[in-house]
Image 1 (cartoon, rainbow, N blue to C red):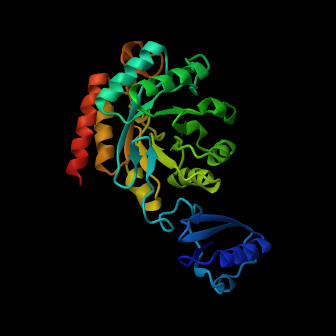
Image 2 (image 1 turned 120 degrees about the vertical axis):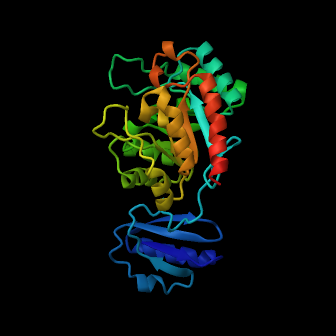
Image 3 (image 1 turned 180 degrees about the vertical axis):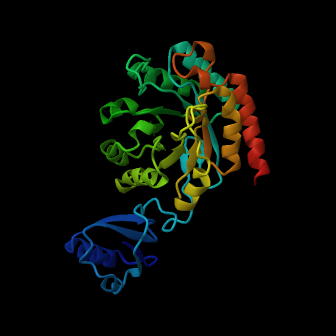
Length: 333
């Protein structure tokens, strides 16, 4: 249930309504804007009569929602959310290209990649320091040292950085990371989502390989419900019966999510394709269908990459992709 308040409703009337709702057992999340707030009710709301709630002077309307993700819902938040990171903006007609290596491997590698990404027109530098790998024998990142190198490379080039967090225990090490990525494997790690929800740091939430769009939005709801509105969603391929590609990129998810939610929607074609030759066409298709950003892997020397070299673009391929993305977006305006 959601209670929409009248514009500029007196604070005393809002407090009186809030006290009544909590007295009846509801958990109330206050959201919206200071001029036009609304109350999202969860928990046991069986004792709350909508007709009685509507009699409070501060109330404009009482809605019973069919969606289980009220804070993510486009119905209650018709205007798109714009997430700003440094000079980059995602959502509401803004588009950004995020790129960098799958993993930080050395100082020389990440500094070279950062300079090449900057030259290509990238607005955020990506790089993994803590890598969740399917096999325990694969390279799993440099850890805190990898984060230090990534942040230093970002500072040198003026690029904000994004890296994947695997555990709340690592959070202190991410203090200077500009965007925290929650990978597909952790999309439903609800304790981790609650912890990040209490942070003001932007979160890039990737869709799990077997997750529905509703499950993705419910995971995002954990972040918003805990107080963090700076959430971006990322489609990165789902698991199907085909083995030609690493995953199947669900491009229908982009316009579908834009219909369902106000949050920015990005696409990661690298992890869906698993092959560098497919990354550019998939990225261009993502831009054409309305994605708010693309996240691609690039490596200065993919043949010697310690992680996912087969899907990493060369620096010159990234530069060409950046130009073509701009052209596609212009053509689709």
